[in-house]
Structures are given as structure tokens and as C-alpha cells.
Image (tube, rainbow, N blue to C red; front, top):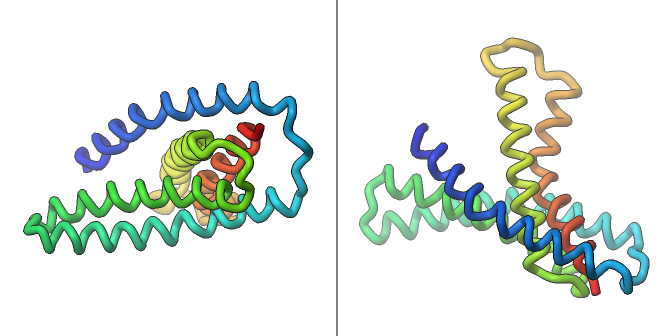
Length: 166
């Protein structure tokens, strides 16, 4: 498990500066942009939320198969699968808001998706702290936290992308 923590640390260190730069660019560009429709924003959030877990499993499985075909051991193929899965999820959550709208900056969506993934990772830690080892029964708060873990990358990508509009 220490290997996964190391991967998360590397991912956080690599993605955090991108998120900050992307967010700062979007704030200056919002003066001239027309108002957003609620249907567009809803489509961006829902699309990003649905695309992220599909991409997670799809790219994870594909990466593992490719790694095995290239001769990697099961352990290395599993690590590669996690890297591929998180990368695919990050890209998919950012690509959907950009594809729906087309008037913002894709790097901003990538930064927002990264921030959403970091927030989701933090929420998972809180959920594990509260509910692991049957400390509490999983009720409405637990289910809401679980749903937010899936939605946060899409929400982050949508907010950052829409803020970067020209």
C-alpha cells in the first residue's frame, strides 16, 4: 500500500501547480463571457461525472492488458493499471465539459478535474475514518459522500472550464 501512497503523492505534486495556473487564468477571462444556461452547466457536470468512472475502469483494464502483453509482472501491471485508470478518469472528466461548451480553455478543465480528484481523495479518507471497521452504519451522509467522490472531478472541471471562458 505504500506504493499507492507514493503514486498519489507524485500525482498530487504534479497536478497541483497545473490546477493553480489554470484557475488563475480563468478568473481574468470571465469579464467578457455571456451568461451560461443551466442546461449547459448541468450537462457538463453530469457528463463529466458519468465519463470519469467509465474511463477509470476502461483505461485501467486496457493499461493492465497492455502491460501484461509487454511482459510486465502482475504487480507492475497492476501499478500501471492504477496510473492509467486515474489518468483516464482525469482526462475524461475534463474532456466532457470542454466538448459540450467549446468556448473555454481545456487546461483549465484539466486543472479543475485535478482539484476535484484531490478533493475526492480527501473525502475518501474522511469516509474511511468515519465508516471503516463498522464504526458507524452507512446512512445518508455515507451515501452522499460516496456520490460526491464520483462527481467532484466533473464538478471541478466544469467550474474551472466555465470560469476560463473568453
